[in-house]
Length: 306
Ligand SMILES: [Zn+2]
Image 1 (cartoon, rainbow, N blue to C red):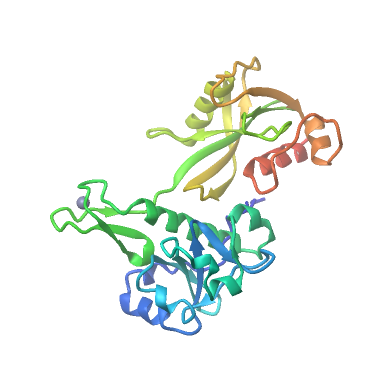
Image 2 (image 1 turned 180 degrees about the vertical axis):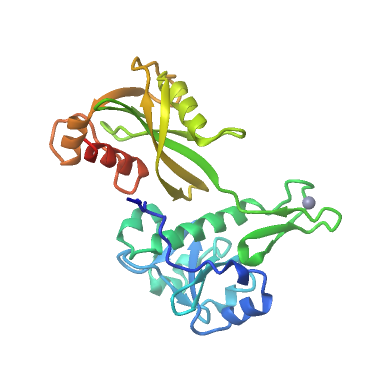
């Protein structure tokens, strides 16, 4: 069974072969059918109530299209082009029409579960790209300015003696449940709401495979040695550019030693206790992460496999 996490499952055809076709892109931005979602300070425009993306026509945002960063998101089933437009430099965009009358700029996490299928993924793509462009105005090789290319999927150094090409980054993060019999290892960060426990997680380091990162992170954070690692699912997480890789790992030891830096507590919890918490029973002492999080899906799978 394949699991599609929130922010995965986009329905647009990314049409990557069109990204280098300047004439085609210009024609799309001039077409009345083309749809554009504005972003302001990394928040997408959503219709009142947050149940739909605040798509505008290219004509409605025409005055911003040449000057503000615009990235191509893809084509829908009718071949209509969709773009994201970054208005962060337009100081009063939220109070300007057509944006004010179309809806509000809102945090993607607050609305993702209310959106129609595929739209959270489309907005995650837009947010990740808009954010990457905002952070990469200068060349990491020579320090000169860079400019957008390939409809938003590359930046190129303006220095003709350098010409370095830079591509949007995706940072792999392993997030995993160590399992021992009918017990799963969960941890708490200080910033979590009271009673909430989640799966352990950490960035994959250069030169590491996923299994090695899972084993290292669990040992660093909780002192548990794990053997076999089993893949569960992945989730794009555009804060700012992570790809969460969900795994299960077979624990070979059970004595917990927390590092005290990343976690304030780690503990083994039984499948029965997690199931009771999942059903919403009171006084379990364990609150699961929200359904939007891949950690929630990992815990749900662990409960269901019992
Ligand atoms: Zn350069």
